[in-house]
Structure formats: structure tokens, C-alpha cells
Length: 100
Image (cartoon, rainbow, N blue to C red; front, side, top):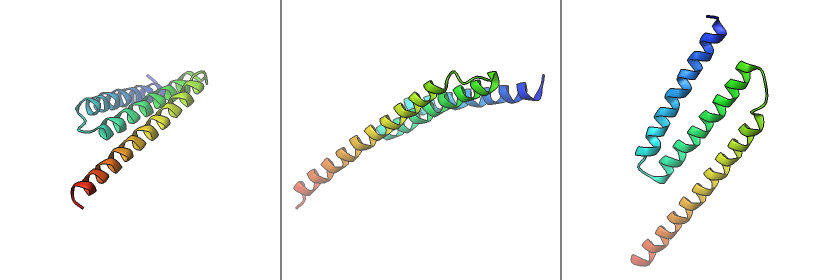
């Protein structure tokens, strides 16, 4: 077994462990923000796996997929951040009306 194969195997194991831990965090997350961060990390892990696969096999076929996944992750993070900010603003407004 060559050093390149050992490194590829080690990277695969680390990616798999990361995916399992992030999936647990998505299921057991206490808030929407915890789950969103976990899903963002999972998408990042998928992007890294695709990049590692391209390096190991010496091609660039997955580059477009990586870009699309990165865009989806960015837009999803922005959407959740805006939703949470809107909810926080509404809660502050309600609190001000209850306690003038």
C-alpha cells in the first residue's frame, strides 16, 4: 500500500466520522441555528469529499457540482440568518409592548 493510498483512506475515514457527528448534531440540535450550522458543515464535508475524489482520480468533473453546493449552502445560511433576525426583532417588539 502506497503513502497516497494510506492518505486517501485516512481522509475517507475522517470524512465519514465528520459526516456521522454532524448528522447527530442535526438530529439532536437544540435550535434551528444549531441545525443550520450542522447542515452547512455537512455540505462543506460533501464538497471536501468531492474535491478529494477529484485529486485522487485526477479529474475536474465534479467542479460544477462543488460550486453549486457551495452556492446552495451560502444562500441557505443567508435565508436562515434573515429568518432568525426577523424573529428576534418581532420578539423584541412584543416585549416592548408588554413592558412599556
